Image 1 (cartoon, one colour):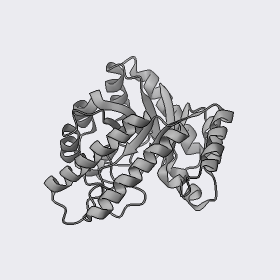
Image 2: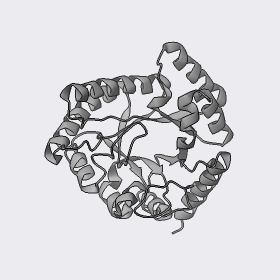
Image 3: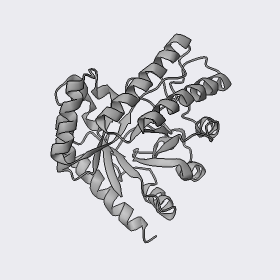
Image 4: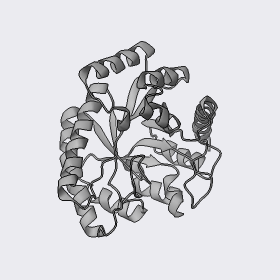
Length: 276
């Protein structure tokens, strides 16, 4: 198993400048991760010097970048803004390549009031196709997440409902669009995590390990202590001989202890899944 982590717990510190991306790289290496994940919000500036510094820090710590998490909003009611979102995502893909990332996490967009499902699905699939062309040229795999709500967003995800997520994914079945499968997000709407996984398992390229305190709420807890059926997900993935990336979404706000506890649980649960 290749293990990475998206440090949601550290978002406020990194967004505010209290800590840096380099600090996260060092911390990730100390935690024994194989790679680190970044949010696109870590990069308000994208000059070549900053990229060079980050690549140097990665090399020094002998750690990679797994995924750059982006917040594409292709369901905005204004066409100009939707097109701008596509331009942003193309730039994000180029940044991911410069950073040495393998994946870019993509989202459908926000569930803006008044957006018809059919129209929204068309907007999303059309722009994903354009982005996929750019990603292929850059050697980047786009990973579409069964998502809830982005850090900078006002509304929940347009494709938060599994049936909408699947409709968009099925509309792109002829493309290399992968899935970033989240182990807890379906629980917010009281949906069945394993049923959704079974429908997309062949397209999972990154497994996002996330946990929530209880079904029907959105209260993150340390991975392995909540309602997400993580061991069962791991068993399903191991049955398919999955050898891709597992990325912990650490959002428990418990500091270093939360990261260490999550990593320990994931490694043990993954090992245990091989014998079930």
